[in-house]
Length: 279
Image 1 (cartoon, rainbow, N blue to C red):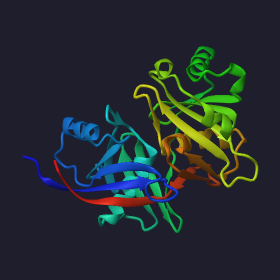
Image 2 (cartoon, rainbow, N blue to C red; image 1 turned 120 degrees about the horizontal axis):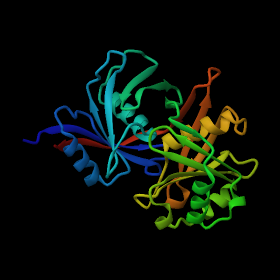
Image 3 (cartoon, rainbow, N blue to C red; image 1 turned 90 degrees about the vertical axis):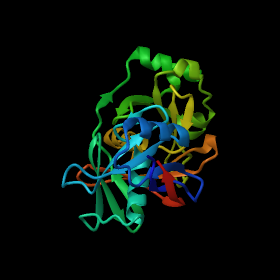
Image 4 (tube, helix red, strand yellow; image 1 turned 120 degrees about the vertical axis):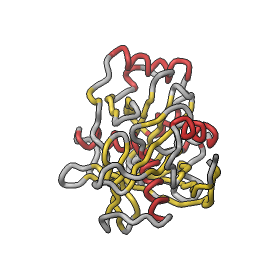
């Protein structure tokens, strides 16, 4: 029998409420089957829905499972920040005052609590290195751009499967018109520089070929882009990226790389819907 469970919907990475990426959070998912979780994620029709469960290790404060409308993800960025925010707001009490430790399929993820809000520590990449020539040619064909328009490229996969290319400018990034039929099976990040003097360094776009959708603001992608670009010496240790412009959002993602090399990804988190769900 369905029962009433606490529920929230959180806006993540928005420059102001309703300008970021929404996340549905079931704050007590104990007893739900995989099928029930997947069905709800399909029904919410958001890029991700998260389900909070008791941790299986004393090193974590809670466990989360993250579903898109079509599959479960081992890790995703905006669900990490949004779930931590909703859990804390619902009365969650972390073991450490300055951080939350989230357990997910990708392992333990630290979420730092500071005056500027929440930030998660980027997980290690599971695949990196340059794209091969065939993959890069297919991506260029999918965007209708010449090969020499790509100034750099890399696998930046931290779980979801991201590959990335960098174009010369934010204007070039925003001008892309994807041919979804050619991008099927790919999860692509595209990044380009804003004009000198802008508050943000990069404009980012995230395109999910299998669903033929553009994600509004993507924490996992921005995390792995930072690991690539800072590691290559192209980006400073602290910068801001914008995302979502082409889909009517105004996302802001803050990157902060510590002296130990850890990449922290932060942004605004705002609960916009509070209540219960029958599930």
